[in-house]
Image 1 (cartoon, rainbow, N blue to C red):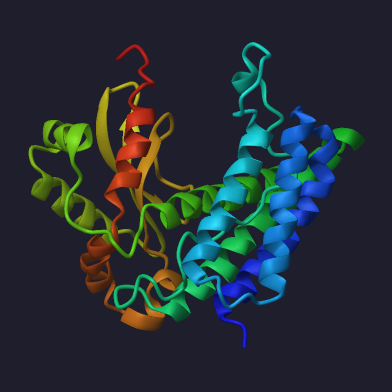
Image 2 (image 1 turned 30 degrees about the vertical axis):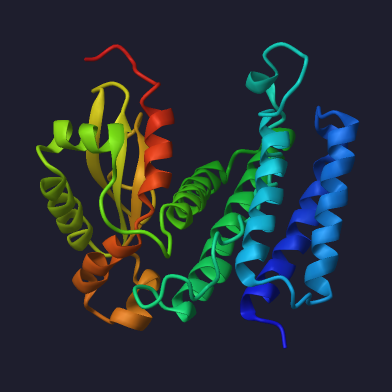
Length: 299
């Protein structure tokens, strides 16, 4: 009998295959690398379809993550090339071609902090819905440009903002959690947290209280502010409202009810307090090291 995670990976393979077929000939990628990716992907897909019992869920996750990262590097142009500035050019994600990234661990990996049932619904249903909504909005706006008919452009811009923000924040959210998480960050991130907030405990208290007090549904977000040259804590209602532009998210916490209600019911505070046990600080540190390279003139 297939595990729920394997079923999810099968569905993910079907989506990735569809995306690959639609963009394959548009990508400016060496044919040898393109052929190797195809070979690796279809071999992986066959192993999942055959329900290879020698592959554990964690091994499936590693393989799926590698395949997804390779495809992403093709689509963004972040691959080795003899052409100058190749990394800056890239093909990007085609209009309406966003895909659901694979969950970077089995569904039950974050228990008891976050239940398997919540992770399945949250990733496979809710996040997929944001991907689908973003793709539809992008295609509708493309259609509007082609026809010169912008009567519904306000609606589709709102849909793109809501679903696009939902997709991008959730993609960060999965990566900044880990079954081996918890504790404190280290190195330059910890130093910057102390500089920006006074201490790690002061930061954690501020972030937790902000998350608990988000009105209705939304997020708490630790960001790097390139203009201020420091870290800030922001909140967002829904995914995109009442937050701040020109900042880079580093650590995000989803406080929509679908993220915790099945397990914690009305006790959002307990969910927030327990969530710190699964924070993947190395992933946050990696994001910070890249983000801090961007600095605008301070005003």
